[in-house]
Length: 115
Figure 1 (cartoon, helix red, strand yellow):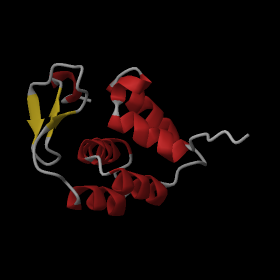
Figure 2: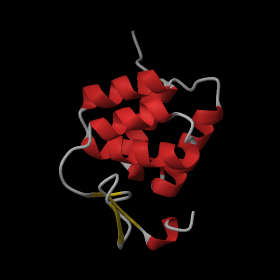
Figure 3: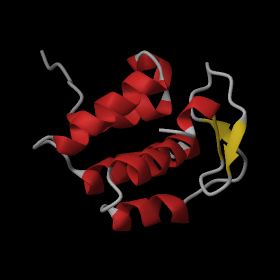
Figure 4: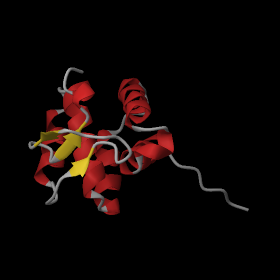
């Protein structure tokens, strides 16, 4: 019997695809931040998973969070920007969002503006 278990990069992508899976975007962002500090950090693999999944919202959230949490990872951030899909999405679909970050085509809660 084989049991497939997600690796950390895929788990991060799942959280960015569906923030509710991790308790919302704040918790998901905390998990992304921990991932970025860990020995498990593998941004090329994370981007590969994101491109295979084809979830534009996840790539927007990833790029947005990387700019805030790991601005030195410019190459990956630029790759996220180069694949932006049309349309605007919410940073967290379950939260009210009143500020559009046009750079990422993301609606964010005003509380994120000061973060």
